[in-house]
Length: 400
Image (cartoon, rainbow, N blue to C red; front, top):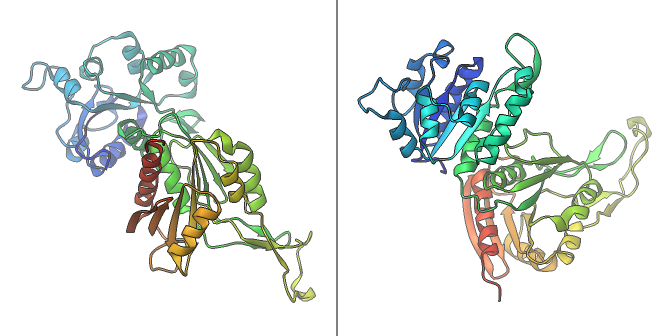
């Protein structure tokens, strides 16, 4: 949605990671962007122009002199909504820092007022060199967006920092730069997954939450410019742009991770399926089947969402989730009031395709004045978008 119709110049330079730029190009086009590929001479030693011409929105350009327009760099730079360079070699980073224009890509970078996203890729020794780091610091101070490289296997077989960021991470960075940024500068805490309460040292009492909705919320908040802390019970790939991940298991663990830092956050979204009950006494060893177990005594867990509502600082938006099977709206409305929430996201987890473990969800977002929005069955990222639309709308509401 964010990239649909946006004009993006994809600069590809001469590094072995240039082959990954093919996937970046494909993902940008699939997201609806108009992609104009620009390849340096060095890039063409690693990848073919024909590949990019076939995947992009227009043919590859490689020279200041090979098209009808006498000033291709000006046309590209002025028409671009964003320029992304992937991979960005140490050379192009230095050229941009010093304003050196010697080919179509560097000339285009100097001829634009559009945002620039640099995705460095090089061997660890080059990446860590003080000159490269200084160049990046200067560019960042000028507003250039840097997507840091990852650690992993490099060309030549060695392992270290300098590997080009994953194409999905690069595209997510582009989306963040071009996105609404209506959460920029805000700290957002999101919980995800289902808590696990110990029965013994092996077995747990838990629920069917996959954490997918919580992770979609984290991805959306990061996309909108927030500094995101994700408190999670599940092991899933961390969404691009999420600043901090805190791994927990039980309700008590999650309480310990959330409550002490709650006041520091502008928005808290409690999307985790927190257990209502736990075994009253967990065995300190594995209970053997032969020993038998006639019953498990349960006790309520502490509902620390109530604590968050009571202690909520002025201006903070507190969002809860209500996974219900009966009287969904009534139960959610009661929870909204009883726990002093600003918004609650209610869903019928017994409905087909909604709730736990699915990639889709259908929810009703309720605020203090009643239903804010009904979201029919759709992807969980779309649900996350609707939730944060409601959060931003609440923040922008005039105070009486």
